[in-house]
Image 1 (cartoon, protein in one colour):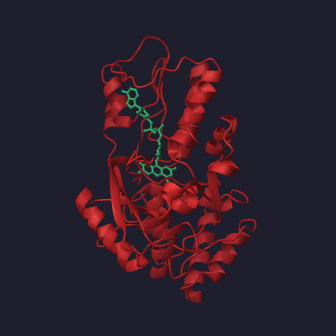
Image 2 (image 1 turned 135 degrees about the vertical axis):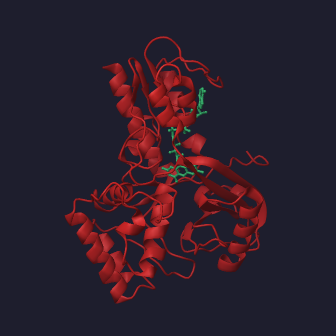
Image 3 (image 1 turned 180 degrees about the vertical axis):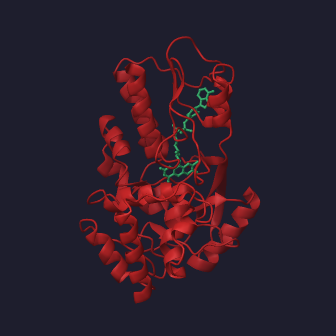
Length: 363
Ligand SMILES: Cc1cc2nc3c(=O)[nH]c(=O)nc-3n(C[C@H](O)[C@H](O)[C@H](O)COP(=O)(O)OP(=O)(O)OC[C@H]3O[C@@H](n4cnc5c(N)ncnc54)[C@H](O)[C@@H]3O)c2cc1C
């Protein structure tokens, strides 16, 4: 909370291909049409340049988006389409040690800057030079080729607690579960156990029982995400509630969100969330740089509200990374976004991991 406003630890987005997360929300009775703003993938900048898909069936939407992308030459379009075809022909597989940068070697600068980099850093929270090519291809495959709407962006209109945990809590209580909140587990209890906490916590809890598993979980590196919340006194009038930003060391935010338009509530009007994935700056430095970036690129003189810097936002999804498996020891399982799986650290990765571990526990 900030001055009575419910602000998340970071702006979250889902995509249409997050089928398990969307199914979970449905099971919990959440009206996803109401609480999620859904739009075709839109990576445009304030001047309208960049890629925007329409709601045609895949892959026609991608083809049309590439053909009509503003600021792309015909050479750029052709280069991307040929490369995408090559990835598809290879079954969206590549060498485990390949980075996204290597995978995309030879693609024109505008394709890298306007499509690959924004997708990579928002999905894997790492730059293309460091991120895993294999995981990136999996995200691309799911987003672009798993049916109509799979590449759609779904942005919560409410805060995250309202979106999922509150609904989950209510569901559990009506289904007779004994829920204990606000209690830190400091040692493993007896009996079958499912650990659903971050990697470093799971590592501490399993140190004696499963030292090798614990060491692997503890060995995961993490990357940060900063979210700068600020308010504009003037109306935003953006073409979309989510805008791509030109980013580099001096201008570190990749995306801006119009929280007022998303929520529709009076207290959020003018509220902007500016997101810096793969953040390497400290809180004050990132705040100053982002406010200046908003001024230069969006023409906004923002009133700063707060900056949330999550230093261990996601595990670093580097090539060939070995993540700890679901089974910790006999009768002990782990779930969460960090557990071995095909996804980067995302809500969908965590939900899929949770379902798989719950099934293992029950059987
Ligand atoms: C700033 C930010 C932005 C993000 N943006 C996106 C996005 O746009 N899209 C997306 O898909 N993903 C995004 N993510 C990633 C996403 O939030 C995570 O992948 C997901 O929340 C992981 O879920 P989890 O259940 O594995 O872990 P968590 O959500 O971290 O849940 C672990 C729980 O364990 C509890 N816990 C910890 N230790 C103990 C203990 N000792 N005893 C009891 N409980 C304990 C914690 O309180 C917490 O509730 C973002 C993450 C951050 C930080």
